[in-house]
Picture: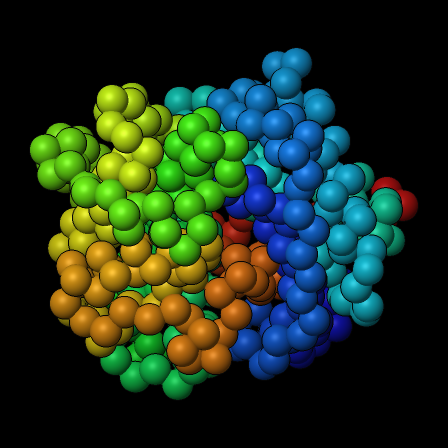
Length: 366
């Protein structure tokens, strides 16, 4: 049992970009954010990244899963063991497959292993309960985004856009006291973001990403290809809604005949257009769009967003937040909510029929 009041929680995230593990401490009571603490990062090396890529799309029991889980557990144990005192850990694991209307959702990595290594309670398997009750299982950061909006003193509706492998956005009304209140949040995946760009750069140039959007800036986006992309039924579907990293993998095939610069430019513009299309679903206009995740470092992508979205667009650093660590911080916050029996998702975030408190708690020595 957690002691009453605020506690330091340690959260970790390994995202769909497959770059590495982020970890961060948050002081929270599961409702308010009181402070942010130490952060850390442990990159995956080339061999580890290859093992994780080989595991994408696979489910428990497939031979590719066990090596991927071992990479995830080892990397997390190495990073999280470097931190000081925390009451508990929020461990998301690595999403290998996400099919909420079919086989469910699969995050590689076992929280019981980490609980033994770290000697701390570990909250994990955050998504399965939501999916089992009819939700999409994603995105899971929205309730944290609501707490962030109130933490920074926002008074008007705003949105947090996370540009990882997949883009996801949370519309927030900070006038609502709690994230589970009616009309407080709306969240959904906007579409592919960094994943197709990263995959293109890896395949064509052996690079992890288009650093700063430099290559895309030299190319010409192909409007006809983007129009075909936006014609997908996904963009017409009413949120909440979510995607797997590879749901739009045919984007790479669509740009196969383009040169490197035009292909990168097309994929980058497509990511921004997907966000703009998603903004049409917001319940009310937003006062600003705050961008987190690796995509905020892509100057070309950010310029497209500023052109397409009718409000100020800025990285979350503009309001004093850490865009590299927001997802890790989110799972620290959510871990405390799970431990205190508070909901972590609801109808307006994942489409689940009622408020759900996801996550399992692994205790060391059990």
